[in-house]
Length: 317
Length: 317
Image (cartoon, rainbow over all chains, first blue to last red; front, top):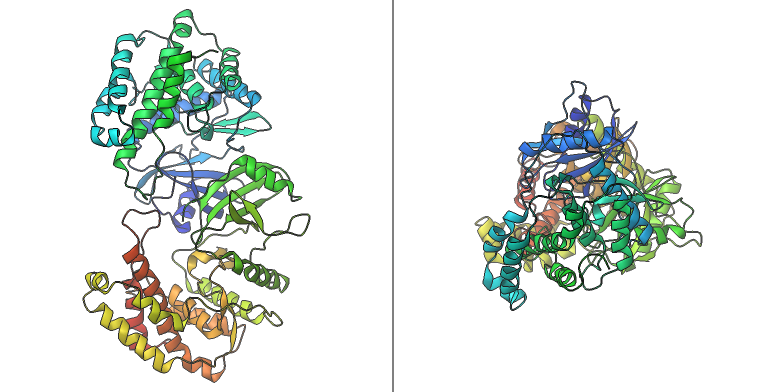
């Protein structure tokens, strides 16, 4: 959430010469999205986001993200397109990084969603899944079910126990449970896989954009719904569940797409998996990020609390 | 150069209710200026910068900055105004911090200035000094000549010598020299005191804004010119001086305001002082900022090299 690579105004002006977008009138480094460098670029005609891909994004994945967003846009979903230059190129080299100029979308990320917003978010997610039709791109989920145990094994147990005594046994048990019960034959789609409130733009309670598709991948579409449910329906610390928000997410989703019986039955375990995924990535970052580093550490236990909720109450209340 | 305090869209919307500026349509945390938290705020009518003041800015200084910018704006200088709400209040409380909504100015910071830009920057600085007329606000320079030796004494000499053997003796000698030769009776003004390229917005070679006045204070106006000369006329590492840029800064300044004989004579020593000021603040930060912290460390020796240049060649070449 910072600017890792600086881009001079001169370099941005040189880049804009490749496009028909007007001349540069303002440029601000912005704190946005995953660990890439982002700039708000303004010309005398419009505004754009310039993203430079840092180490966490594999450039080989960019064509998948481009194709998915182009497809979704064609189908009427509100997602930011990668912009092509005069020669049809959307992938550029800027300041030693792979870089893309991306459509700017209005809207703000809400921190305290109310049920109408949550319903519209569920609807936008359902519409996104429904819109896929003939989209043929695939990308394995690098943080899917089979990756959780290996990730857990990379987390120093001494540090994990310092965070919460008994945490390693809890996680090991959950890995076992999910290995025994994970549903492998659910309908798949290109899923967002990270649809937290900061990745949704809202204006007048309507969704104006789903953004930050850099975790998008091929996985069970019901897992995407479970991730979104987990991401929206709890207080930040995971301690308080809002059934109004949770139900609105699901109702909005079902307004656009039907789940089959196997998907509905799997939702509670998918939600447990979603909790474990974020618990583990946060735990890994917690242990391996020095205090005071450029990336602020997020509390892993906020997802242990969500996990406790789903174990006790399931998904639909 | 990061966002230290998060502001929710809800909190920004609540703030905007105090103003007649339209409703919030976009909001991005931006990497801008000194160590405050900054957001680009967009409404359906215009754009603004929302600044939250972190520990490095003393709220007691804010009225001085407000009054100075309001005065300069009235006199036609291109500086960002603090915006008043319906009740005439420009200082707000947001997310536990003192905060101001500030005019957005177009333009970009150039990294490789050419002489015409430098001339216009000098001119804008001269116009800023000339415009002061009846401005009566005062603020002692917290990083002025009398503060350099105390700051030097706070820099661990072991760490200083690690950076460059002999550095402590060099700095001690320079403190002695400046103590013996510093001119104390030059005409003063409200000076910017930090007019580096990233604090000047440029469009079509013209200055569209002088920004980031949070080091502004009462000091010798010729010292401000010396700081600006030091800030613009060298390669980033301080190893290469550009006489075309340096002369253009001075020529542009003199196009708007005359220096008296004592000021002209003092310029070389003022430039040496400017170098020592940035050498010392960078050295202090270098020693006291952990590697990998949110603030990237800047090379102190870039200002030792500039100092070497001024000692060997003076200011006007």
